[in-house]
Image (cartoon, rainbow, N blue to C red):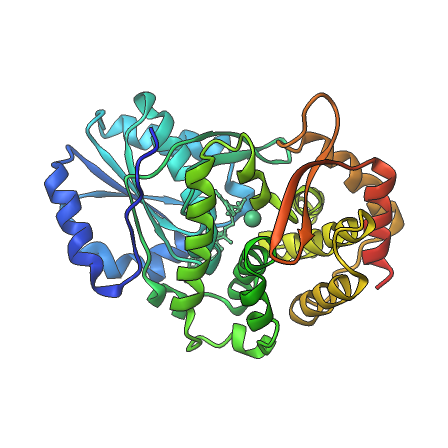
Length: 352
Ligand SMILES: NC(=O)c1ccc[n+]([C@@H]2O[C@H](COP(=O)([O-])OP(=O)(O)OC[C@H]3O[C@@H](n4cnc5c(N)ncnc54)[C@H](O)[C@@H]3O)[C@@H](O)[C@H]2O)c1
Ligand SMILES: [Zn+2]
């Protein structure tokens, strides 16, 4: 099931993509877009792709659910897609995760290609084969592991991405540096937050770097039995924060924004375990707040966020397991943390 991924990060690789598609002689092709990627990204592909149908879904995390999967499966069924057909996911992490999930389960699995259009999906979500949807408020609760047949990255798509989305995607870049590359952490620490929302920023290097780190980890542990868990640094509390605010429109956080809060809290836990120094904790905290500001979390909200970690997918036998920094650039996993310690970490954040 897991084979080497082909990842192209060059604008001119469109020819290779087309030749991959024609060589494989797919019976039918569907391109999944949301309203935004239909408007901004689809024109880049439409005349180059062989005959295909488009499936347009509503944009946003709140549509990453079974209802939207129903629409996708219905469309494939109505157009009699068979097992030799292809789905192309043209969008951010929501389309990649959900379109991939629909493809991986339709008739027990058809081929799919990821063409990520957000920074977050270019540096993280499109690679690694985790697919899925949210369920009853729990993030990525239903899903499968299945690698795409092909991933194509065109940084040009970032030109139309909202600044807030660009900044959100950078959280996964910070994560990759903190868990695996102390030298690169030293470099990005010097970035001015204004650079990160500059459309002309040279993202190619950053994308390559993140993909390399992620691919190396995923290759050694594709189904997250061990080491791959380090990619969840910041995500245990981050997902709980994201899930908590998801149904509250005024406070809704983007994935990366929630993970940024999660990384501060989990760096605090790393410090409390005597893994990282107080100076490291201060550097991480200051850098993240400089970029993302500090969304408020009240004491009453902390009480509601903590139980949400009980659904985290790394848990086993009823205990909440964290991936924590052993040092900057090095991460451990399966570290038991109590509810009191989680509470303390969110209080640390809220009192900053
Ligand atoms: N599978 C994984 O390993 C993995 C890893 C990280 C995150 N994720 C998931 O990814 C999701 C978040 O992904 P995201 O941040 O890409 O969100 P997203 O897919 O919702 O995209 C963000 C917004 O940008 C719009 N958009 C996308 N590309 C655009 C472009 N080029 N120009 C203009 N607008 C554009 C979208 O329509 C959407 O409104 C979450 O559901 C998260 O759980 C998955
Ligand atoms: Zn993430």
